[in-house]
Amino acid sequence: MRNRANSKHSEVLLTSPQEIFTTLIKELQHARESIDMEFYIFLGDRIGNTITSLLRRKARQGVRVRLVVDGYGSRKMPRKMRQALTQEGVQLRVAHTFSHCRNHRKMVIIDQRTALVGGINIADRYVVGNELGVWYDAVLRIGGVAVAPLCRLFDYDFAPTANRIVPTPDETAHSPMLYWSESGGGGAMMRLLYDVIDGAERDIIFTTPYFMPPRGVLRHLEQAVERGVRASVIIPRRCDIWLIDDVMRHSIREAESLGIEVLLLDNAFIHAKLALVDTRRVVVGSANLDARSLGVNRELMLSSFNRTTCATAKHFLQRLRQMATPASDHEIKCYLPRFITRAITPLM
Image 1 (cartoon, one colour):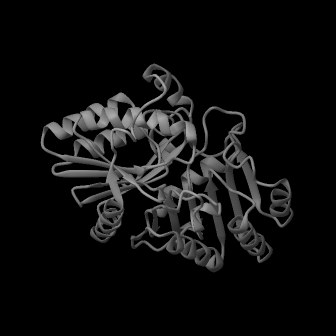
Image 2 (cartoon, rainbow, N blue to C red):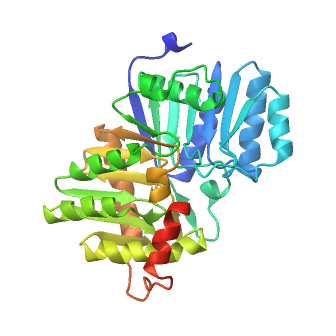
């Protein structure tokens, strides 16, 4: 199958819930040979059942369907749903059920020719929102030669952890736009982040749902500000995990003291893990700006210098900036002592 992949590279950045899931469903419907999917969260709600029905139908049609879900993130995935998938021939792997490390990657590969990589999971809130408002996310759809390394990375993730029969990704999954981290982090996400920050000349803007960066990241951002770079971060005003709100307030106060602009998004939840550097480089994927994503979990990010992708990201960020406002002193009042938040941040 792989030798028939289109050699011409293509990419499109998707930034609205409807656009993302319409594209996902259409790609699944058009699959003829294989579907490989990997998600942190896969729930048994409306969108979960829609995707499950599609995967079952494709398996019945003879399409090879493989699915990897994280054991902790997808712990609420109904047993009946798992059984229905496997009974139809879907090959299901549940990863890291009892591990502190979590498989936080999100990717879909269709016929080993097209791939979707970003921040979404399979749950209704990513489509229609919830009490926090609309959930904004970003997914990069790619086609052509850049898909092959993702196929090898998925093969590695899908293989049983014992007696692996595929090479480790550091031997096979190299790509100029692909960045991944293995269990325990290995520093890959931190190196990528430092490269992104240190490469900024005029401005750099991040979106992340969880803003709890390690001190090293703040130091690099501080250095960027000192050389004249405008550094900004857009985060939700309220988090979907209540304890994280107070932890993030400490990070907001520290970031603002270093000259980093922090904007809070109202009546919506920004779940996109995205960075735009000087309107010439976009980085998008699964890693949050927190200690767990940067040093513990399995993560996946794509880096692009494509002009159209950068323009789409710029437009997306401009819309979010218009909806966001700076934090007031009252809003970032902290209740937990800083030493407690530093202790619990790597665990969250």
